Image (tube, rainbow, N blue to C red; front, side):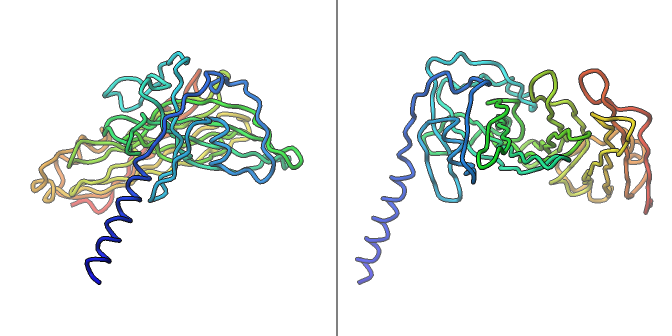
Length: 316
């Protein structure tokens, strides 16, 4: 019986692989990128089904929760969008080789008056026949759609198919909702990337509605560092509850970490230190540190104000 069972397993595996490899690239109209599109969805709103209405391509469901829509727009004129990696240049979207669109997040929230909203976040990457996302220094292109609940219907209030690209291997980090003012909501994303085998440095980005569109309005480096044997740090942020500022309130970022000189001598990869601790790293064997920075909205983006506050502990 063993050869028969083996043949059955091989046949089943081949059939499953063939199903996953059969991806259709459907051509769509350029009207899908119109930010003024009208879309109403009956409650409850299903994220994947709604994504397919926004991007009516071919729906693919792979294993490991790899669900995406394949589409191509031959009549679309590609536009340039920022890729924060800054290595392979900005992205031209829609991609001429086709697009794979995935649902990143389905976020529910309410304002102070009890109005209910829902944000769908999407990740766009270049179409791949095997359903893969590749390119270490290519970010996933973030798109957003905002819905408001009206009775038993969700009405789309704003639609921005593409904002900017974040993350590595064409995979954007998941945006997190944050209130930065009175009934003013934005998103934070931790963008992390680095060379093969080396440390991954993370930046904190804030994406908010400004000048009629969602866009990055804060970039904070030295927010996170992983995959290093001798130094690491992680960040957290808080919005200052200041009644004098109705919108775009100040944001305080705290970065905590530790350093070990002995471990540094054994590591094949070095790291660029935050300037606030660089001098200490030259003279001490080990220490813990905390850096506090305050950002305030100035003109069109958040800027660092005042001098960062640095604290050291367990210094040897």
